[in-house]
Length: 273
Image 1 (cartoon, rainbow, N blue to C red):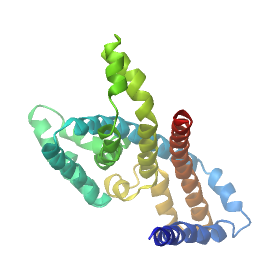
Image 2 (cartoon, rainbow, N blue to C red):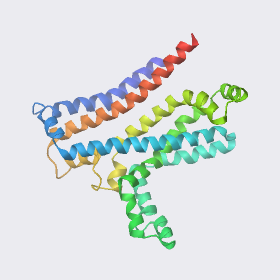
Image 3 (cartoon, helix red, strand yellow):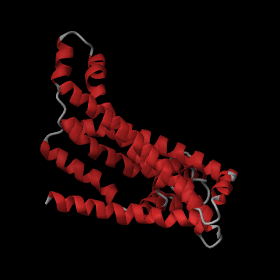
Image 4 (cartoon, rainbow, N blue to C red):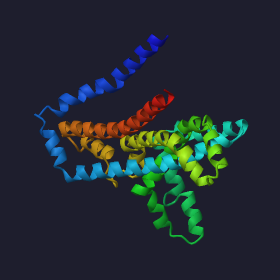
């Protein structure tokens, strides 16, 4: 069974990572690699890369903070209440990016329900309703499905957390904040950072929500890449080069989380010996 699982994992990796990467490489280097020069010499690309990284880091950081707080609260709840809370948290993960974008438009757009309710309180619906179509609104929409992902992935960390060091620190006279900082934070920080890196990479690479919500109003790499391969674009070597750059950015962000997690595991093994 273990051997079959290993073969299935390698087959999945081959089909959905190695083969698409192998298909991109010949196209990206079809003109001798000059596509990379055109990409990095394009101010539009540089701005899109900057916006993509900032959007991913901010959305990932905010989602990690809020998701961590929810995970802590989940661990404190009785089993019956925790079950329906986890069910509600799982609902956003079942929707596609397009559905989420249209839902936010219906709720926060210029004629959305929330916008109209705020207009009754004296707010300008044109001003309030335009915010959802900005980078901030896009990050808000991303957080809708990134926060549950963080909360559900971190819940086991807090549910299985050993509180004895925390109680011992409190018994020895440490304040609640100092005891939490010295005993809880070092143990859970690697897992939180790893989850933040994961959702940040997801935010950098997704395009469905961004396409439906902001269209071409926000310059980020997934939308710029879509424009390169759309009806108006024909520079396929540059599009392939741009795809590899986006892939490299996401891999670097994920790699940071993996390094932090592996260092924590190494320290745990050394401490055990």
